[in-house]
Length: 508
Ligand SMILES: [Zn+2]
Image 1 (cartoon, rainbow, N blue to C red):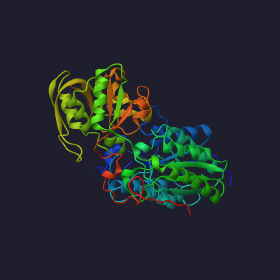
Image 2: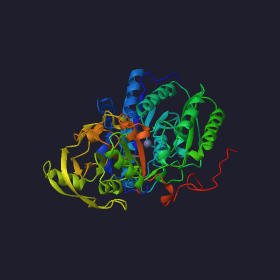
Image 3: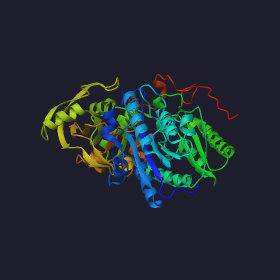
Image 4: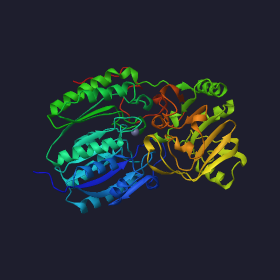
């Protein structure tokens, strides 16, 4: 069958990373980030500063560049990482997708922007459910191409029901647009008649997030190995590290190969990459800095200007992994020790942010953090503070994951607490972009230390100030602690690395 001249491609998506241990995500969380239906999807994707992550804009731009097509917008729901999605909203979204997709038929192809680590309050494989429903509607022959975050936990349905599986290769995620463009190229090929086979191999390794960087380390090496082994028949090789805190039966580092050749070739390659990943297993254990040592380092940086400035990452309270962005362990320790010339960001506390906006600049008061406790880690703490600056929180991301994105953080404030300036935000966000300090008039280059509530994405934003040798990952309690033994796992497949002894893996 020749490729359709003006193919109709459905655009849809469901993208959220869910931490089973965090409070539920509601429809409001999606509305606050990206919730679009119909033609608004392509319109927003083609706009100068889209609110959505860059996969869909990349897909749309590459489709536009490659020739005529018609975008058929269905629904796209995207949220900041959070807890499991309230199941009623998921059902509502599913019904909207079903209705709009059915009305839109016939379509020639489907592009689905997924994350892959979604959960609902009742379902551990919402992406699999969505793919099943959409496959029922479009039938077996319409190409479905999906992109995934590399934190995706991959089920069989997520591989079998689509025609091409395309996962990010960078962490922090800097290739989202590129993967969207790749999805468009694959879509064009599928429209011209190419058919694929997909194979997945899962390893009994649930890598702690901090061991899943792609600049260097065991995960970087496995991804690189996969890309190097990719022959001409291979459409895509994706190595998905997964997201431990989703706590599902589908957790585990997975290799997914999409091929235009034979299934046995794809199987051979997937196994070869999995074997390589398995050989790296001893390297998937995190190495964090104890709090006392981190405080010493920050004090020393403040005392001695000859020492390099440092960036402290509170990896255990990462809003990008469902953390609340409000634990006080690091801030309190820095403040009580008298750390000087430090910037701290960003603390999610809408009550405090709103309160501060009733005061003027330079107002002195007792700042009470976490007056509404959201998790067992979000303990209240108060300290004498001065209002150092105020902002309406409207900004455009400058570097890393938020670059070029329009962000509305709500009323924000910078508070001086001793020698530390703390940025408090109204909307929960990961401190992955220098703009969150800069919009408050703060100069990162002049700080002797900064602390960020982020696990890894800050690296892509703050790299112009802090190279890898200046980053200190601090060991603290929290919803996203990389020390996985501190969690009560229910669904995670066991035995598994790094939690258990004597884990075995065999390809036979
Ligand atoms: Zn991710």
